[in-house]
Length: 409
Image 1 (cartoon, rainbow, N blue to C red):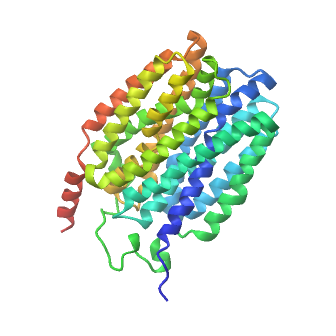
Image 2 (image 1 turned 120 degrees about the horizontal axis):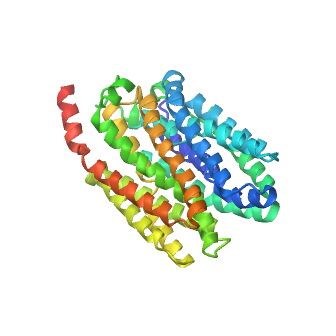
Image 3 (image 1 turned 120 degrees about the vertical axis):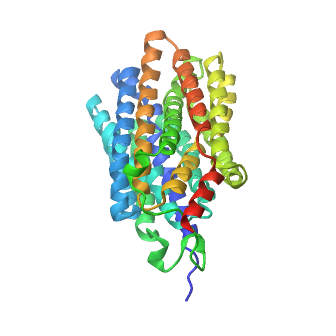
């Protein structure tokens, strides 16, 4: 009996997994205020803990990538999600700052490295080739919806039940919902159930499957994609971790979660639209457009004198935030194939996270020494401008695919 194509189920499960993983990992900024009030831990110290999370996450991306290449994404995603949930449950017990560094800075980061965008992108890329860009965008919408639902939920829980209860509820969401779904409803490859990518009934062309990390590191196109992606990392986490505190600076002490929720909603819409436009416009053009839109948003943010300007920023920034991730993932998958995609994509994410850690730490440091965020946001705009220029030198999608097709003949 012919079973229905399991790839559509994979998209749903990766969507849910990314909802939980990104929703949890991006809540840290909302815990800054209650931790400061309860224990007196200052913004620079808390920002350093988040930077540790970014660095640990980045370091473990290539490691998780190799594990995925060896054992498949399913077991890596499930075990990593379990670790992430347990880390949040442990965070409900913290009384010393070192515990926050260990539970959030290390354990959560290791878990996120194995159940975040990289791992789920590899899984989706195994199930889809022709529709890879579109399906990566659809599954990646979970990142936005997770923020849209879990960031406001976190703010509500902290305000009404305390930060410890918030940690418990968020941890249980991962342990009870995400982990069983991945374990019992996902397969690593379509071949495992007698199917082919995209649900085709016959074999289809795909790029070479034997690319190695060493080959990617010798490719100029890999470095162009990865360095542009690094500018995304710096600015993405600068905003996510410091926008709530910036809102407090401007007098909107309860608006941080709302602003991030608006950005997530705008990003979800943009994610769907860019997925539909990829075939007609190409990934390179869309990437450059998104970098420029985010640059405009940062210029606006640097000169924002009041709360209403932050709501405008959230919309513009949201349009250009998460859609960058599936585009870069698709570019790397198109160029190097799926076999070693975990290792290759993991290294690209390492660079992304190094810059993310710098963005989080410098945001807190420059705010502390200067008294406001204008220098930090200005630096973010400059890095985005560099990212857009670098991406301009990337090969066009159609040129690359034509070259690969000729070589395959």
